[in-house]
Amino acid sequence: MSALSVEELHKLFSTKTKTKSEQLKTLEQYFPYFDKEIKKTGVTQYLLWEEYKENHPDGYMFSQFRYWYLEWRNEVSPVMHFNHKAGG
Image 1: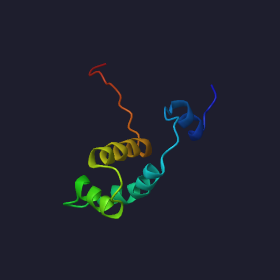
Image 2: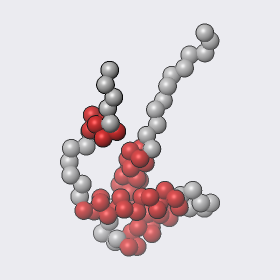
Image 3: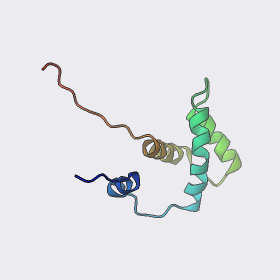
Image 4: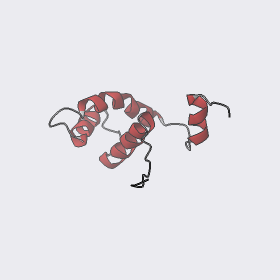
């Protein structure tokens, strides 16, 4: 059994073959900041989107903003679920 590097695993499981648009690249630059801000009391995705739209009036609308933010979070912090049966 051979070990694969993180990059090799990412290529193996990645389904994204399209190149990212400049609009998406711009949005993704905000995601680490958004991820930090969303943990603060009273901060919502909508407020973060409004901040983004203020700086980029031609940027993504809220539904696409949420979609790409969720995609980014799943890529940065993937979660693996295990089914566990109670008992021996």
